[in-house]
Amino acid sequence: MMDFKEILERVNTFHICTRCTGRLFAQVGHELDNFKRGESIAFVAESMGAKLELVSEVECSICKGIFSEIDTYASEIERMTKNFEFNSMLVGSTFSQETLTLEKNYQELCGSKGEPIKKEFSRELGKVVLERMRKEFDRVNPEIMIKVNTEFMSVDLQIKSLYIYGTYRKYIRGIPQTRWIKYSEETRTVESLIGAPIIAMSKGKDYALHGAGREDVDVRMLGNGREFVLEVHDPVIRTLVLKKVEDIINDQKEGVEVCNLRFSSKEEVVKIKSDRHAKIYNAKISLRGEDNFAQVSEATKELIGKVIYQRTPLRVSISRSDLIRERKIIDIKPQIESDGSIILTIEAEAGTYIKELISGDEGRTKPSLSELLSKEVRIEELDVIEILR
Ligand SMILES: [Zn+2]
Image (tube, rainbow, N blue to C red):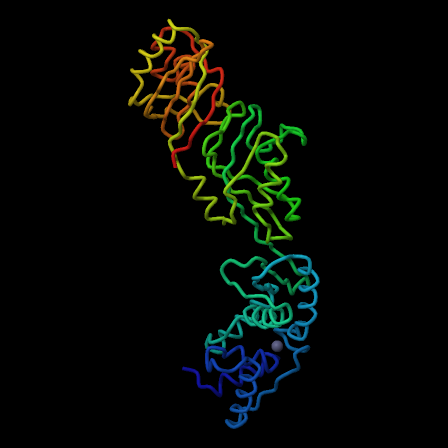
């Protein structure tokens, strides 16, 4: 084992400052900051007859005087975050590979008891920034993450997205759930009808709707509504009054309404996207009249409680791989309207292709109502009337 005097003699070959000397031994004596530790090491060295020849911070081969720039960086951070509404933050920093490698080599030569410069710099800058701006420090989930690049002297902000949970109902057919490259800017979507008012209020850069599943464009979403989380990227304002947001969205009267709005999280996005709830639908079919109703009523009895096999439908086979799904039909209740049209109230497991349950999709769904009746049946109108969650 190398004795301490020998180590101190090595330090003299590094051309480093008092603070960087202290940092080489940061794991020894936790109560001191690195500068004070450096001073006491120099004192000990002198008493051992191994006087340290330390240089000024600007001349230092490791820090090159970066710690004297802390106020400059703090001012820049203050300027960049000025307009954002936030409470918690975290400051991180990066240094050139050259500096990190040099420091690591020196620390290894001194017994690997040091602390990386970026850790000390981030901590010291963080202290100044928090004190000046009166914000909280959050290591896990800060609203603003600040990254200082000391090599290029730049500051980068990562703003935590704002997440708003709610449920939506769609009363009009023909509204797609999300924006898509194929649609024009003006196309109304569930996403834009909810997202556009929210982004106007939060002054964010963009938004995304994360839905708990989706209904087809021609299907209405009624009843208790579908859960979603709207994500706002780079929000400036976080403290939205959600009751007001709800009123503004609903007052558009564009066929999409929201309720139960509350603030949410990234974790909830994952949760609602993986939920698998059974659903109840109302399906108006292409057959009409009393005779057909009697036949349909008989045939649907064959489907209740049965598992059906559904090969990926032709209409979605471009975007989804060709698989066979097994889904259980929990219940079907047929009823006839005064005008002779037939409505089926169908309860089925999550992910059942309802249109194909009726049409059979050229034999790709088995059994189907078409197959049982030996005639072509289609769905004319489909509504989700309840999601069983
Ligand atoms: Zn230094």
